[in-house]
Image 1 (cartoon, rainbow, N blue to C red):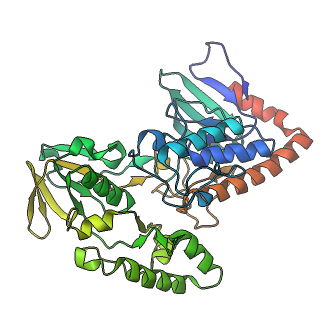
Image 2: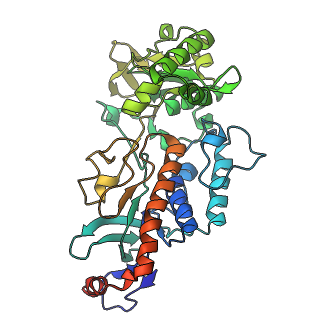
Image 3: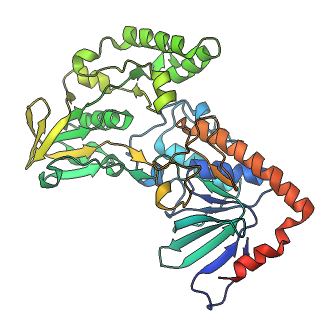
Length: 415
């Protein structure tokens, strides 16, 4: 990385990066950075927060553990420690990521928020503009741009009639840490995905009275079947059987283990869990105890919300509940459209337009990692592909000494 303007004559400091700029220092960004190091390619990782994996460190609840066995969640070239349990805790996963960054000598530029990234057709380079927490503006010039901000960059807060007039505490699941502060309170949890289920379970364990809103159909599977991870079993079956048949087998086994869950207000989708994940990216819920609380009546499953009023929520069924607090387990979304000035590779919803496995590479040196809706394993596979692709071009550039092409210097000198 070379600094082309350290004097004060320019309003924005301009930096040439002799390699890719990676936006995001979560697991996806770290994985790309590590794989690039293995290829001998330098890079700059930009992170708007003050730490790596800020989603895990700052926007997750205390009891969180990996939902899949650790072998399906490890990043490239660095397995989890053997003494870690099969499902590492939040703290253990953060420690693993910090060890990963140290192992590959990754030092992200923290507190640098990307304002815009645009490909300059004249210079054939990417211009990435950032601003730091103290207002310092920097423009990075690079040949490759890797978008690693992921699928969970921003919280999704739905517009619900009357929510502003509710009067009680309303938080998103990303701000929920523990049910301790809700002890003895009546809490509505909006959402019945993995977060909604686990928050409801945690509230129940802290003697709160949770009501979980289940507006749409959801697949709930046991985390393990016959002592083996459900995910691992599914992957094993898919090496021999078609996806639709694996779905049938999983649902039959789930029925034997969990029984009929529809009588508790939890409707199953007509599409199988794996097919639904592949086609729409909807992850099935892996039950870790919430269903037992639902059966016991300690977690109440309710229909969709019609509106809120002061201290009350009215359901679409007409039933009214007195409520003290609301937790919005309504998910997250990509923030790519807010800063990436490009519309050919990414769609308006912030995801690549191409479907897996062809959604990791765009044109003009643009890449995406962590948008496969296939978790950490998908991000790791992306990272390996991206690093190999960039590494091949980088080696050719070194041989031909194209880094010193005059047009690069002309482009930078205009700032």
